[in-house]
Every structure is written in C-alpha cells, then in structure tokens.
Length: 250
Length: 309
Image (cartoon, rainbow over all chains, first blue to last red):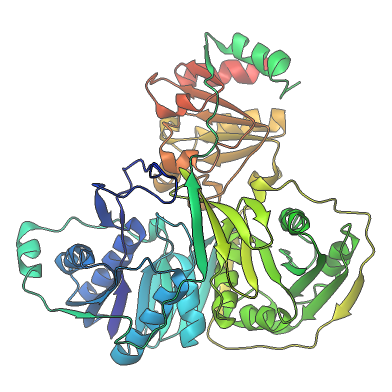
C-alpha cells in the first residue's frame, strides 16, 4: 500500500509573529520555520503504518518555496521513502494546493493520503477537504485513531460532541488531529540517510495547475490588547470583585 | 445579494450556533435563507423558520444525510448554492468538515472563521492562533465562508415565519459510512454557549480532581472546559478542549484553573469578557490576559471558592 503524506513549511509554533511595519503582511524575515505540527503527526502515522507492515511506500509531498526541501528532508528522516517538492515562490491558497496535490494523486495513485487537519499559519483547515472534493475520495478529518483493514480505513474523529467513527473505502483522505499520535524525533543516522533519499522537484505549471489567488490579503493587524488586570490576594477578594466590580456572578 | 446559511442541527432541533451565522449574514446584508440538510429533520427546519428575518427555509431530507457525511452533504449544498452570493455556516466541526468540500466543488477559495464583515466581499479573520487579524478580499463569484461564532452575537431565534420548501435531492456517494459515536452527555450548558466557563489544565493533576470544577460549575451554572495538556494527559475527553484547535469560547466569565496559558489555549478564550486565573506559578502567561489573577495552590483555592459562591 502506498501512502502519500503532505507537509507544509510554516513559522515554528513557538514564534510570536508580528505584522510588517507597513501592516501589509506577516513579518517572516529571519523567523524560524518548521514542519507544520499537524503534518508531522501525519508523517508519523504514515511511518507507523509502514512499521506495522500495512504500508509499503511513503511519499512525502510539499507545495512551497525551495526551502521546503528542509521540511521534506525532515519527513524523510522520520521515515518517508522519497519526496516531491512542487516548487513555487507564490503563497498558494488551500484550493490551489489541493489542485497540485490532486495532480500528484493522479501520477502516484496512493491508497491513502495523510495530511494535517490545518496549518498553524493560516489556520484555514481546508486543504484535505478540498482534495476530497477534487479527487472524489472520501475524507475523514480531525482523526485521532486510524486503522487499515484490507481496502478500508476506520477512523475515529474528534468532533464537537465527542468522538465519531467512520469507515471509508480506500483511496481516502485522512487529516490528523493532535491526538492521532506523538511524533518521534528523527535520529542522527536517519537524518544522514535522509540526505541521500530521492527528492524530485516539479512546479504547478508542470502539473498544469492554475494557481491564481482568489483572495487578496489587504492587511494584517494585531488583535485588540486586553487591559492589564490585577492580582487579588485571596478568594474572598476575588469573589467580591466578581460580584461587585465585574458583576459576572451574583 | 443573498446568503444561504447552512443550519447546524441534530435533526430534532437546530443548534443555536446557526444564529451566529445568521447575524454575520445580516452584517453583510441582503436576503437570508437557511438550508437544513438531514434525515427526518422537519423539527429542525421548523425552528429555522422561526428565526427573525429569514426569507425561506429549504429542507433536504434524505437518509443519506443522516450523519452529515461530507461526501453526501457537500454536493447537496453546492447544488443549492446556485443563485446565492454567499454561503456560510458557523465554524463547528461539522461545518469545518463540509464547507471546504463545498467550496472546492464550486471552484471557490473558502474563507475560514470570519470574525468581522468589512463589506460584502471583504472579511476579517484570525490567523496564527489569533495572534494576528487578517483582512481579506474575495474575488470569487460566490463567497463560501465559515463564521467564528463568538465574533457575532446570535440573531433572535424567534419572531419569523419563513416558508419551508422541500428540496428533492439525494447524494449517496458511498465514500464513507457512519459506524458509531461516543457523545458526551452532560446536564451542564454547552461550552460554546455557556455564560460562565471553568477550565482546568495540567495543574489539576488527574481526572478525579476535575470533580472540584464540576461542583463549582454546577453552583454557577457553568460549563467545564480544559486545556490541551489536560486532554492529552487523559484527564478529560477531547470535546472539552478550549483553544486554537479545540473550541473557541467567549463567555462573560472564564475561570482558568491550573492552566499556564500557552498561546494555543489563549486563542480559544481571550475574547471572554472577564478572565480569572488561578495558578501557583506567578510567572504563568495566563496572568497576562487575566482581569483577576490569584497566585495560589488550586487545591487550597478551589474548595474556598466553592464555599464562597
């Protein structure tokens, strides 16, 4: 069984982002970049499928600038077999990324596509679902447990009310939530080995994908700051403040 | 201009989250219709028809729509979208699952989680876990949107008498099937609709200690939430998680107990009107957003608080 796993290069989750001084966009100069944490979980799940003998090949794919090779190398170090970079310096929207991934699905014919449920930069939470629409495959988003049995995937999903279990015929798309697994750290020997693994580069144009943006970013701003609060001494002062100052309890 | 709001419901009743989308649609202006897709969902449709200011309610009632499977519901919504300028739904896990699939079927770039309406084609939305607010303009003919519920006050649930129209439609893709669900049953208010939310973090130590929060919540009529750390540690189930990837809440009062305040947690609660933090670490980032901070051992403070309210 072949697994396609998509990874995105994003600002590291520990970085506190700022707007550019002209407020036109996010300031990404000299900011630490990493693999999107949800994508890392998807890679880990792919590797576990291979370790269980379910998957035979893992292909990692990313859509982004040349530097996205770093994140693909991370996926290779974690256990992916080879990688494809769809190289573009444009900032692609989820729809365009899904179109690129659809083209890769057509050429690679994976049995399952694993992705993160959202990227922590745009927080869109769209690409997996859009790829589902474009390929006509079933989708199981927000997955916290994945089991493959023959030609079917059984997925437990984290939903607002609790947990939902779906069964999907393969090929299907599964997007990872936080509790699907805890990703391993790549070992030094595996990082070294990853440098020798195959990494092919293509472009959206080569894939015949129209990447024109539909949405224009007009600007970014900082959210309204909360006014500084106070420290209370004890519970009785807290209850007094909540009753008589904030008037939120009676 | 006309907006089609996709109702969130469980067939027997409409979820009040739908009313936040109606409010966002009112901010855009123009006619507003509601689409109810489900199985034996007439009761939910009748509630939708009572929402003030709705033109009509369309009902697609079919066995294939029983569990809101995206593969079946999305083509139905995409079909119904013809003639509308805006399609929207409140960003619940159901809508987040379906709406992007609808958008791609329509060849539209969806806009997730709008928190403000600037004009009919321009919206504000949080990015980077709410650390920045982006203003974005759509050039698509149909705008497909999800709405951050906490950013729009719910429209009145009553006062309308819209007509209800059945839509003959059946999409059964067989691309996924429902096996089962584990739904938390609680007498407490729903997290996203509660006036008061009390949340516990890793500092709670274990699941049993959450009983202290449940006791306090029952006295205050509050819902109980949790940080990701508490859910990951297995103290409480996932549906209680508040944060960037969990539930977004903005109650009148949010009490964070034993929660350090990672930005991913703050993203889910910092729009609350009043925030109280109880934590023994006075350097905890949660204090930077708290209106009232109490540096104390929660195991001492909670019983005192419980006795005082």
